[in-house]
Length: 191
Image (cartoon, rainbow, N blue to C red; front, side, top):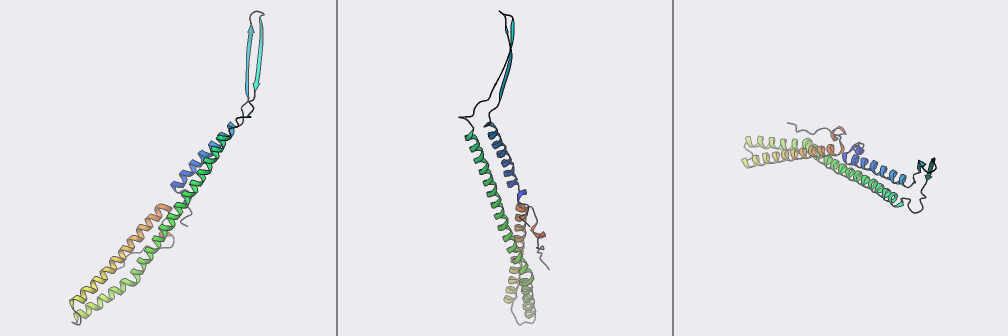
């Protein structure tokens, strides 16, 4: 549905890149806890005795005092914070999509109700008042009131239609999916 592509949202993808970076930092800090083997070699020449000697040495530092625990803990903390922030961003975007979809749904239901029920009734009432006016049974004030009510209903329907499409654009911007393709038909003004 609309929440299926939430991991493709740019804000969530940005956290995915930060997560990969933090994961690399943790790997680096863990690697520095293991001491490196140091090998060295050399050649010496003693001129007094005309001797040549070869020297080879190796050393492995014992990580008694420095096992980089602080660096590892800090890297783990940063990784956990990144995970938390990414999940918080996902929840925030999900909430925004749900709110925008609810706004979209409410506005479209109102626009549809006005279009299919209220406007035809207002138009019939205006036609009846106009017919009665032409027959002399009603006055100009009644005719003007009927037209005002009809135009008010049309403005209300257009306003609901605008809110419906504005909310649809908001949903599409957040979810990268058109909500009209998920169960709603475009509400248009019928003449």
